[in-house]
Image (tube, rainbow, N blue to C red; front, side, top):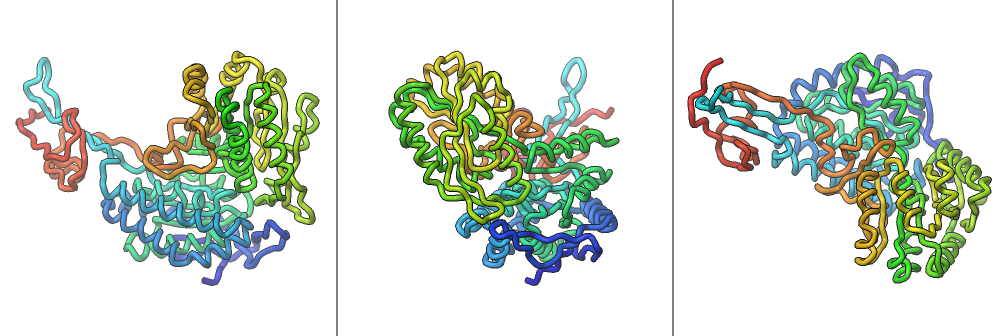
Length: 538
């Protein structure tokens, strides 16, 4: 497919104008063809109009049809795998194996949501049948289920050009819930975005769905994203990126005349606590796993472990020596964008100037690569950490901070003072877990996912996964952006009281024509919910 550089507006294309930008190869800085045209105000207005019109039909589309649509998107993406990997490799310099894994994850989560909407119980259909004989007043027939919100804006992520971008988890879950989607493509990988966007557009056409179910807008700056979030017909947003950008969009969503939900997955330093028993038993093994985790993807994962707490004893010396050795042997890394490279450089420089922090190991420095960096291992003590809030800040890239503690009370104080994070990791033995139960209790209030004897990088897409956490890790700690529970972000409950059966949605009809699981008079069942008693009027 020849890239056009034009936004996808329903089944049509965006306007050609003077506002253009190009993607750049992160390794050599080369500008990549073609020029991409930033969406005009007319493009944006048309995309939102089409989405709003499509909502009336798509919101009522049967789960089986949405499932076919989601599976068709996956099949279309798989059909252009080689082309996507080739272009994405140029725009991100990510290795082929990583991109193959991202395509598999993207298509896998599309198919997982297809299963969910086809099965139907996610709608949380509830039926409380009428009881005209109840005293002192009769009970009316009351039924409820979840309904979609309306057009959803999704922002592509810089660090996941596939799994968190055009057809990623936000888009898949919004589609599954019955919402049209407008994607603001990330300017770092627009060619990848256009290829995947065309696959989604084609799936809309192939499934006979309304034109406005999907649009893709390009823009080299922030104007398009801000304008989308301000548009009165947009009803929700999904975002993965920096705290700075996320908070700006959060505030826009909250300050509109009609505030809307905005689900932002932002910064997280993902603390790791290595307890004494584990340090003694598996210190060197943990060091190897930790190094692999904080340098994975050049440390550009939102789940990268950025601070590690270890007791100050002889076992720690062996652990830290091994970690220093691994860092010192690390090959250079290249980061995805100049913005990320600049931020990483500022973070490393700022941390290096702190008198209470030591730079104890550096990887092999990059040579001749404008986005190249070396890994970095810093070390401090718990008292210095407690006195300096900046030490808990995220540095996005291949670095971490080792914090030595000498007393249990220091660890609990640190844990209690943590802000919201996506994850917290504990390495320990069974005895450690018993002795540190209070630490686990504290961390439950600080993160969305607790990991035991593992590492936070690598997020499994499944029913139970929670990829979220208290602010500022996310804008809403009650939600997840990964796993099937992500669908609940883009819907709301609607209740029907006293309606005759023929006027109800199929999911709530007495005969249960879809055969889904429902809560009928407080019990989960797939059986019919025949009205056994006549209902009183009024």
